[in-house]
Length: 140
Image: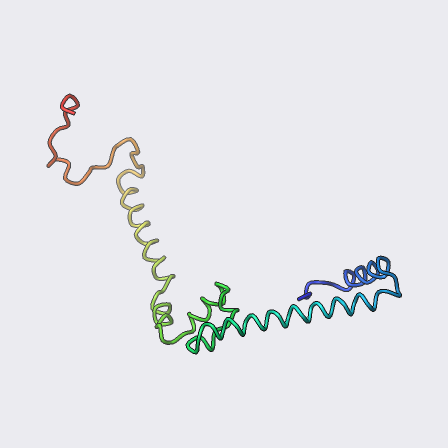
């Protein structure tokens, strides 16, 4: 819970606690805090058990940590029933990127063979443009 508290922060908290509560009241305050933490833990465990009982036997292996999206996805990716490992292993990102790069380079080579410049003012031809009737602005 307090994994990121260093020794300097811990010493500062202890000194502040002694200054605020005094050395004679500090043991009672620590006992009260520990009792409160213990009651909160008991309450949360009781709530977890109640939820498991209400969900029924099909959720007997339900863990509340699975509600975290990262944990859920990691657990599902390791699940053999879904076949996700085969999909993940069958998809080669490097191969796909190489194909896209080759396609881009081949288009760049085609444009460089036609003088090295691309005419940005020329509009690309639309497929089937010659099949369309002419546009009449007065008719609309």
